Image (cartoon, rainbow, N blue to C red; front, side):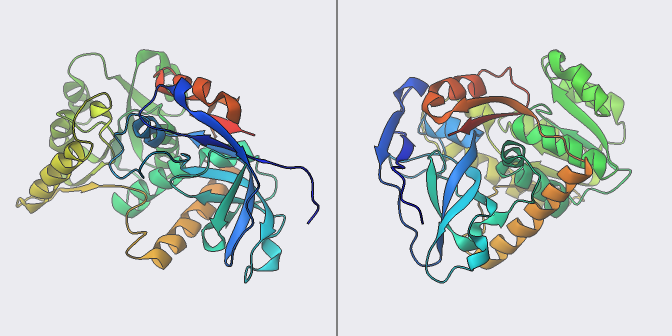
Length: 345
């Protein structure tokens, strides 16, 4: 390995801070241990998880201080003992949950998924945490098929933009909620838009789908989840994947999630033909690590293929250098962006 005067640059979340309160830490580039690879980051992103973490409100975040960053795309710069030599120099994607907001990241080789040549690292990055979430909810949970109708809340969000494209590619009819300024872009993608600020969203959806919808994807939680459940057709699935409505609440970070999961559990216990589930992309990792990894690899590979086919067009809202993480967070949290805010070295 050539020895340049490379240094490690990391973004540290020291505690509950405003975006400007994140710190830049410099140090020595780490050396991969057995089974690890050192990835030189080319793109990482700002996801909803980090927005929650800086408020101390993500339900299973590590203790402060830590380096955030749910996922990354980069090039393998060094390999540890026992790692297949062909990984060296490869571009890979990885889901790490924390630690990706850094110039160099140590990743278990088993978690590094090759990115096909010719895919831009920033485009690939938009598909990692958001794409996996969308893919698994659509195909593994709701099992959406051609001819079905689905409702996607926040159709212009990081996950939503990919979800609507994948649902369209699967042959589903898609109704998407978003503020009015995003409606033209949604119509161009074959999505029927509904303005979530226009009063009774449920009534609008019911008018569009009198028989009910086959799947609802809801990241908002809160009281609106009841409407999501009521809009389901028999045999339909509600996939809840967040509690965005509680983003600025004080108090327990676990309680909104527990309350939501309890409610979904209760609905599932009722004698009806509808299902509800709470989706967390990280669930199952501790219990069934190898199955989790195999699914992640299969699904991410399928997403990269969908990108190459043109089924999915990456939406990049903005790119910021790592050092301007405050600007990136402010933009991601502004609620005005379509697509993903990225950080690059």
